[in-house]
Length: 194
Image (cartoon, rainbow, N blue to C red):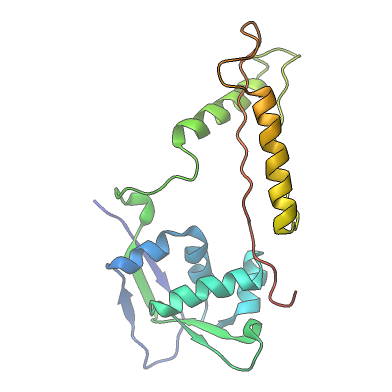
């Protein structure tokens, strides 16, 4: 049984009162950021206001709003040349769609649940001291603005280190088994004014 999410907005009279999304547009709303964008909308907000509320660059918000507008889930009112001032409002006073968390449809996992489980379990056990005081553990979450050249260089050097320290079928059989999971991916677009 699929659950439903229903968002309620304050919109001008004369607009559709209920929009039920039960077609291919459901896939657009499976994206958590798009759902958060919808949840922040009142009667109307600018791209800059949504960006500020969610702590995401205005260019990223604009891209998602354009996708939602193309699918008639929101209306994007373009006024003037500065897209940060464009106003967005929901297409209806209420928008109802299937809860993607209840959907049994196959979705692509960015990280397999088994890998995520293994790493989460290892960090829990490390915090409990199961591996002893000499256990090496590191979690890094770093963000920086890099050029394409810098990102490619970082990736190349990281792959060299992985090949050196994690060679397939090699290593010290008497040592502790370590895992390494790295993700180098863009996490936000440059702001519109950069």
